[in-house]
Amino acid sequence: MSDAELAAHLARVAGRILIEVRGAGVCIGKALGDVGDQTANQFLVHALRAQRPDDGLLSEEMKCEGSRLGKSRVWIVDPVDGTREYSESREDWAVHVGLAIDGEASVGAVSLPGVGDGVVYRTDAPVVVPAEPDRLRMVVSRSRPAAEAVAVAKALDAELVPMGSAGAKAMSIIRGEADIYLHSGGQYEWDSCAPVAVAKAHGLHCSRIDGSPLVYNQDNVYLPDLLICRPEHAGRVLDLVASL
Image (cartoon, rainbow, N blue to C red; front, side, top):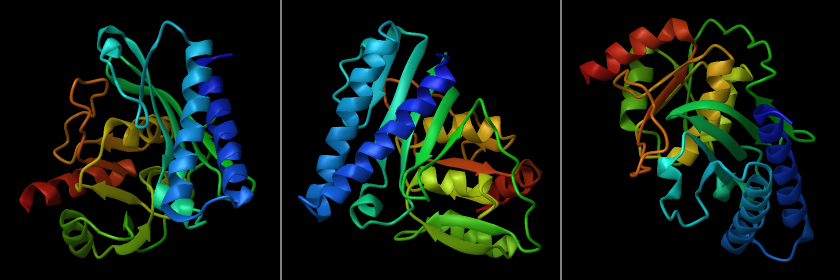
């Protein structure tokens, strides 16, 4: 099984597990989010250690002991990206399974288990990105839109599209639901590794909001900002951010 096939398989199965956990009805709210996080994390960690024992591993729900830092290949996973949305039975949450090679988000899959029967976007099977509408759309946090994103959207006369998890936001561009995802409110490597790998495979622009590359498997896993968008808009968006 190739890396991309493994990522897609694990993201899909973890998503199904999470749907089953939520459907069991044994807990609600924050408790449901905690149970879902831990259950999906155990599955992903054990499966990756079994299938890729020589690779490094970084997960939001696992204490990092630092051994990954000396490895070229590091799996970076977020068992439930958008725990709040998951616990509220919304659709806009995701499972991220990404592989960084020499610091670059290279392979990955993002599962949207709440959409239909579960949709998985992957680096080895890109789909056609729908044509954009006449008016640009910028996807932002549904609870706390970043000031930079709001300012850039105003300058572009772009419609704001509120949405939950980072993975759901990134995939919304591939799905034709938005055109620009600009984030500056703070994230970690597991929030963007898999979405960035998938977005790049679909021909989208991915960078920090100053235009510099997104670098993974760092000692400090805080990676606070990113821009994912259709490539034809990247230059103007970066210029607008720099002018703020």
